[in-house]
Image (cartoon, rainbow, N blue to C red; front, side):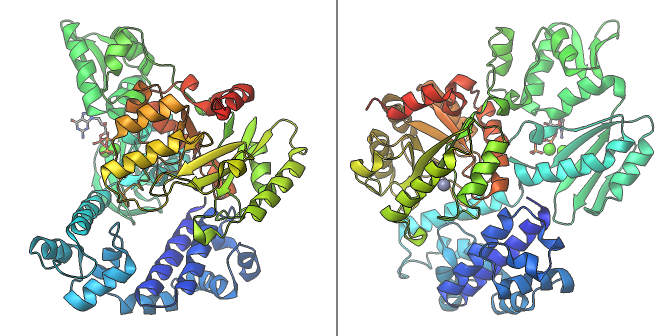
Length: 571
Ligand code: DGT
Ligand code: CA
Ligand code: CA
Ligand code: ZN
C-alpha cells in the first residue's frame, strides 16, 4: 500500500465527512468514501498516475480523479479547503469521537456552542447535555469513553504505519551500517507504538547519524548525541536511532527490544547468578569479564534460558516457561495455508473475484475463502441471486487453480438477537460462514453476551469475525462476558477470528491468551478488501504470537481435510 495512496484516501475520507457534516447530500459523501477505500487499496502509486490512470481506479470518476491530480499539482484540493473553512477544526475533531458522528457533532456546535473535545467533556460534566434530544445517560457514558480513547490514541502510532516507516529508514541507511534493525515495541509487534527504535552497528557512526538526521521524512531533530539521535517526522512520529558496538549487538538488541518488564525479569536472573546484564553485554560481577554479547542467543543462553521470541517478551510468564523448557512453538506466517475471510467488488472490496484468487494463488495458499457481505448490511445490496451467481463464477474459476481449493463463503451479520441473515437451507450451500457484529455495538453486557453465544450456537456459523468489533483508537470493544462467549465458542466448534487488519487486531493478544485457556480455536484472517491487503497477515500473526498460539490452535494452518471436518461443525 504506497503512502501517497493512504494520504489521498485520508483527504477523500475527510471530504466525505465534511460533506456529511455541512448537511450535504449523503449520496455524494458515500461516493467519496468509496473512492477513498479504492484508492487506499489500489496497487499503483496514485501520485504517479495521469487522469486516465486515475480513472482506472474503481469508484473514481472524472471529478474525483481531477481532485487527486490537483492534490499533486497544486499541493491542495481547493474544494476541500473551502469545506474545511466552513467547519471549525474542533468540530471536525468532535466527529471522530466514537458513537458521535457528523450530524450530532454539528448539532452540538450549532445549538450548544460546543466546538472542541474539551468543551464537550466539560459540558457533559456540567450536565449541560441533560434533556438534549438524543443524549441520555448511556450516550454520555459512551461519549466519555470515546473521548478517552481518542486522547490515548493520539499519542501512539499503528504498528503498520510504524513498520512501513521503519523499513523505509532501514533500507536507506543499510548501505552505511554493518548491522541495522528495529527494536522496541515494534519488534514485539504491539498494536501501537509510542516511538520507533532503530539500532545500528557501524565502523564509523557519523555518516549514518548524518544521513538519518537529513532523511526526507525528518520534520525536526529532537536530540543529537554521540550514540543516539532522535527525530520527529513531519507527521509527529518520534524515531530513536542508537549506534551500538558491533560486538555487543545481541546484548543491545535484548536491551532495546524490551519490554522493560521483561528486562527486569532477566536482570533478576543475572543478579542471582552474580552476573551483570546491560546493553553492552553480560558480565561477571567479580572479575568484570565479558561473558556474552554478540548474539541474543548467547546472552539468553548464558543466563540459562533458550532464546525468547520478541513477541513473548512482555513478562506474561515467558521467563518461567523458558526456565521450565516450556516455551510455545509459536505459529508463524509460513504455517498459514489459507485465508478464510476476504471480500471482492461484489460488495465493498475493490478487486474482482479473479484478481483476488490470482493474488491468493500467488501467495501459495492451499485454500482460500471468498466471504462477501450478506444482505442485512443494506448498503452492500446483496441478494440471494447475486450470491448464487458468484458461487457459479467461483466454481467455474476453480479449475484454474489446481493447487488451491477455492471455498465459497459469506460474512453474515449477527443481529441484536444473535440471528443471522439467511435461513439454514441457504446457509447449508456455503463452504464456510463467518459471522460478525456490524451494528448495535453498544448493547448492554447481558444482551451482547447472549447475542454472541447465540451466534456460536448456530450450526452454520464457523467463525466469529472481528469478535469484539473494536477499531484501535476509534471504537472500543463491545461489552460482553467474554468468558461465557469463549466457553460457547469452544463448546460449539466455532472458531474466533484474529482479524489481521492493522487497525482491528481483533481478538487482541490478551483476549487470545484468555480464550485459549477455554480451548478456543482461532482463524487468522486478512479481511482483505483489496489485493494488497492479503499482506496484513503479519499483524494477525503478531497478535497470535503475543497470545502464545501454536499452529495447532489456528484452523487455517490445518490441512484442507481437517479444516473441512471442523467446518462441518458436527452436522
Ligand atoms: P513504546 O515506544 O512506548 O511503544 O514502547 P517501547 O517498549 O518501545 O519503549 P521505549 O521506546 O521507551 O524503549 C525501548 C526499549 O528500551 C524498551 O522496550 C526497553 C528498553 N529500556 C530498558 N531500560 C530502559 C530505560 O530505563 N529507559 C528506557 N526509555 N528504555 C529502556
Ligand atoms: Ca519504542
Ligand atoms: Ca524509544
Ligand atoms: Zn469482512
